[in-house]
Image 1: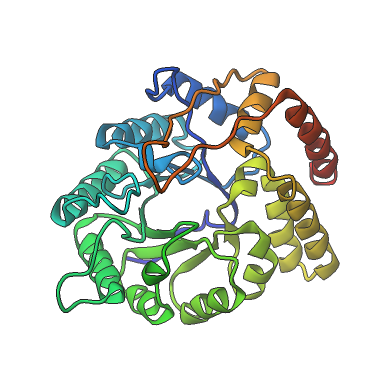
Image 2: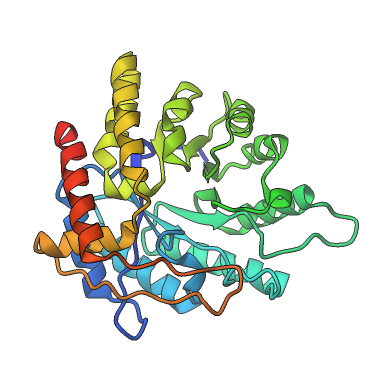
Length: 327
């Protein structure tokens, strides 16, 4: 299978999930939120059941529901990437049955692809533990080999923020996996320069798209060959990320640094970006409820703190100021 993921350029949105008050997926609200995001024509693809979309709260049916809703709504407009890992809430004390976890991933991947997803996305398998005589890297490699053999379309790997050290994919394992015909791309959420360099060096010359997973590293990532990013800014301020990549391609180094400055300026306040953008969308005429799902019952997860009105207004002022040169 030739790697034809030409849409992997610039900002790929880790799409926030819209919920009803009782925690059910809000299909209508999700479509309105997407329509708000589509206005600027700045996002190259939409990644649903993402980390920022509370992927660890999803059930099997939730995943199928959001895939159908978004693939239908964005058909012919933008590609949709669907998080298709088996069901697990990231509680390391309660890991799922490994065979069931793999089977669910295969089922979800094929279901998403059948309704029009451009790729099935799988997290590094922190849900699993190595079998006897197997180390973590062998387990990771075996897992993706098994997935790619059974998923009938493009597969992407996603290494989320906070991945435990034992589960961080080794560059040589990533290199070997690129030989699989449908293992086409990966997002790696790291701010560690040496590790990012070695991962990108490992896939140099391969038919594989390395997606920067930490936007503070985008200026470095493009220099190493990446052309895309999935991060908070890819949904909040995608124009900045696109400008950085475009300017690099044109040889405008000063422009690259100016774009990275602006990207970092919007990260410094450390705001609840999900709350902000849903409120901002509503303010702009695209009613998007602020309801969420709690993860407090999991000792390894926590809920974001809601924005105050003052925080919202202060950040909106900064946001609109920083965005002005990129509109």
